Length: 137
Image (tube, rainbow, N blue to C red; front, side, top):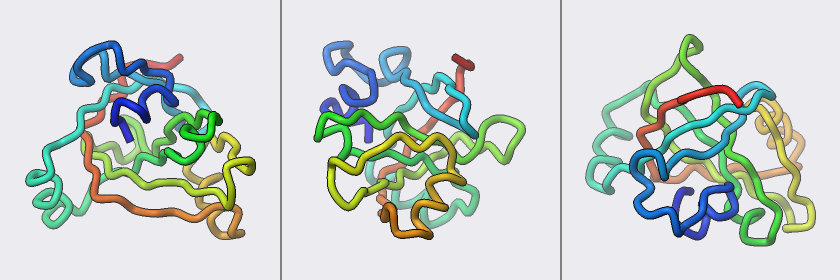
């Protein structure tokens, strides 16, 4: 997800410097509404410990394959403050059958429905982020 090359496809330029703090701000959908979020990737040793011991990690959906093919895919969240929000987010990649099939999905329900009909496949990663929802667009 927010690796420098993936950030370009998400609307965040890799030339903005560190992705910690304001440079890590990017758009994300939640229930068909666009928000601004701030992400910071956690170190690998912290990721594995938190994934093992924290049962309430939220999901952030990304599609690096779409971004790499020139079809930007804005991240999708499964919660915000007041709706089961936890500041820890595990990345799930949304994979389309081929890059030309990429389309923006704007809610976790739409992504799960697309997966149920085999329009996409979902791949849970071990990438974990500290994420703050900082505003509505």
